[in-house]
Amino acid sequence: MPNISKISLEIRSNEPLNRNCFRLEMCGDGIPAFSPGQFVQLGIPGKFLKRPISVCDADGEHIVLIYKAVGEGTEILSGLSGGSRLELLAPLGRGFSAEACKRSALLTGGGLGSAPLLFLCKTLLGAGKKVNAVLCFNTAADVVLADEYKKLDVEPQIVTLDGSMGIKGYATDAVFPGHDFFYTCGPLPMMRAVCNTLPGPGQASMEERMGCGAGYCYGCTIKTADGPARVCADGPVFDKDKLLW
Amino acid sequence: MVRKLSTEFCGLSFTNPVVPASGTFGFGLELADSMDLNVLGGISLKGTTLEARFGNPTPRIAECNGGLLNSVGLQNPGIRELVNAKVPALRRIFSGRIIANISGFSAEEYKECCRIADSCGGIDIIELNISCPNVHGGGMAFGTDPGAAAEVTEAVRSVCSKPLVVKLSPNVTDIVSVARACEDAGADGLCLINTILGMRIDIKTRRPVLANRTGGLSGPAVFPVALRMVYDVAHACSIPVMGCGGVSGAQDVVEMMMAGARVVQVGSENLRNPFACKEIVEDLPVVMEKLGIEKLSDIIGCA
Image (cartoon, each protein chain N blue to C red):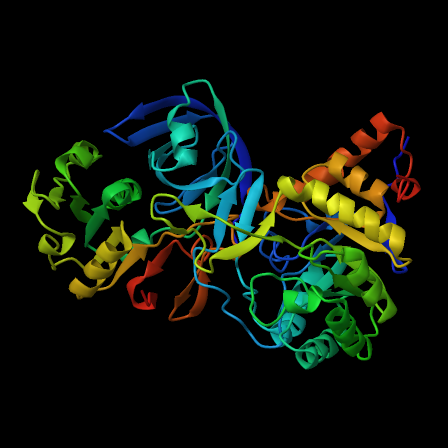
């Protein structure tokens, strides 16, 4: 297990990206190194458990998290402004294996799954790999981070369920073979469909309600080909052929 | 002045009374790279059964005001894996007390599981879990009836040479009668409380949050309930008591000991802060100084 730290960071900005998604940037000392696909447990004022949120970007002084205000905890979080301090546990989980991609990768994100894949996209490009991205949303108003991919010179194929932007339909209507490795993060049915559609090797990032987030409460266990696995510590990223869905 | 944190339980010395509670600290090894485990007085290992168990479907965790519900359902690798691999690995790096928490679905199964645990040199204490609310036909079924509690305690006693502590359920009308039944059946000590059966419903989906529908409530919300039960049992029984339930800081440890606990287990707090027990041990001398306590052993049961 990796060395986990508890750190206190100051909110630099906490801005909406669309009607319910926010970009939270924090700064401070002691931010550890992250690999794409890893997450933090974020303490929310007034809430007992911390919230697991994947890392969208990080360096030694800043960390960026993208979250959706969908429940009591994230609603409280969305109301916090710059200057507030939050407690985090980090780094957590096993992220994507960027080195598994030899030449070209296909990233398929659903909703906020686009956030950890953006971090992975940067890492892959930095290692000289070719990247294609498919980003899927319910409707045009939900689209997030597409411009961030464009800034990296990756033109993402947008897919919306209602056809209000890009291709109308599902991820499987847009993904295509020809890459030596694929990575996916998003709703479980989307990831399952992507894994079943793409013939080659790949990885998916799973989601479960968590307790500790660090592997010792066994609250987020799923069944895998290797036996019971904790999403927080053995994952959240798993090889396609290990997932039993 | 050097404040003395040491305590004694069933003839065993503890460097301090702080012990992560079963199920909230895994098998001790999960956090070994992130902290020095040797600051802990002991570790109560995750509940273990004779055979490996996957546990309940997810979601297994639901938050609530002042705590959480869990329905993990005794996921564990089985007692043989515990004694052959987990405990030896922990013993190599941990000098505090190792407490094996044992559960089952019949008196015979408890007995066989304890027989195997008893043969493991690294285990100091056996904690008989007759209070898990998240499995059907076992666990808590034995802990809610004095007769059944006595029956399983007696069965295990016959194969257990180590100190035998029975972990009690709060989901009873009269916890003292269950405690006395365990004492009379040969228990060396008692640990209380396990979680309180509870439930949450997702008001958007109109379905229970937990896949198992119900779960065990723990966290600061249950502290006064646990304290009252520890107080009642410690005054009614002559065997020593480990206090457990909603302890979240050094002051709670002092309060539990004043109620009669010789060892204090910390549970849910670990789930939001893996360093909770370490911080409590560090805070204890400060709290003791403020309260004029020289030795923790002086305050046990003083209330």
